[in-house]
Length: 491
Ligand SMILES: [Zn+2]
Image (cartoon, rainbow, N blue to C red; front, side, top):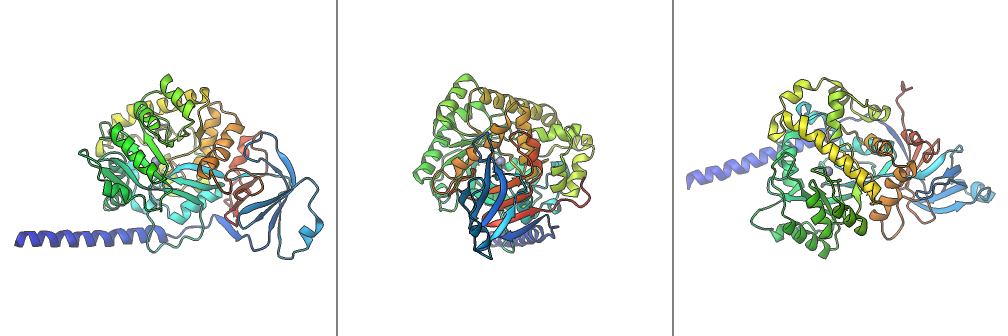
């Protein structure tokens, strides 16, 4: 009996010590002093009128010259036709706030359909440490700074019990990520997150399905009403040869989730796995496939079902970009990226890659597999574009090389570079994802009466000049009026 007792004691003490360590680490990360990058004002109890703006409503190419857009408690309550604001509306109420748009363009705020907070600092895996993690409040502020006010969070958010989050974007989050035993994202988390954080993160973020069968009790526990959607991962290539869920298990999990009224968002690397998932009712594909190309059968299925596919063009490109330093870091990335991350991304990666052998991510993986994945992913986006398949913009922020907020803006520029029109690209980050996330009730991603007042003010028309999205003047979100603080010495 003695050895058993001693062993149990060791486990208990070890567990407590780990918990303490992790709590301290989380406290450190979440309470880390952040420099202020945005000013936040509350809307107040009387309406706010945004005057003197042209409106891109999220769907129509032509701007609408409204005399004023009225918002109250985070809802668009009135749109005043040109020259038709009754003077008493502006003068009658002392506490009413009037925001002068200066002839700029008001449009729906952006939506990032794929992000993970608290996962990384954006540094490459061989140069990461706990100390580099952005505090959650900073990640939120950076997203708001860039004009991104709604986020699909594709993993649970691990928040420290001491966290003091004051404001942030609107978050649609999943419960635990469902994957095969030891499947993606477990090896990646072990490689990116330092121990013991990685151990704790895996326990909190992932539900591993045993190859022998689904533990339905554990699965049912995910439908506690706290999650917006269910996330399933089917990926045998991170790293190569990782275990993945069978199509039968995926079909079963989708069916159970749907019984609970919860949509299922699927990460599938292989086209065949994506095909089976969509056929079995997956509601969203969180990436284009990257382990090979979509064939005609797949494209027809996506076209027929109109299953949305999230673009995530930067998930493999970051490695190519980091190796060649091309294309360069954008000014917005530079503004929102931690100085240490910038240094790390600009450093020579040759040595880091050569010594990078952790958890199966070999130099050959970096030099051969990753560029191939990128090529296939881009080819699949081009094919989907040619087939009129519903795509929405998302970054998978949390992946190395990505920057909170700034990466969604860059995503839109990359999509435009693939030959999509500005109008299409803007819709992919506003009205199209908005309709998926808010199918009933007040609309998201559009400017019309009764819709959520999630809006940004730009100085130029982004439908004509996409660069206008790089400088957001004012962000309206959830009853807050936010102004970004540009760097004092910038430009
Ligand atoms: Zn992801």
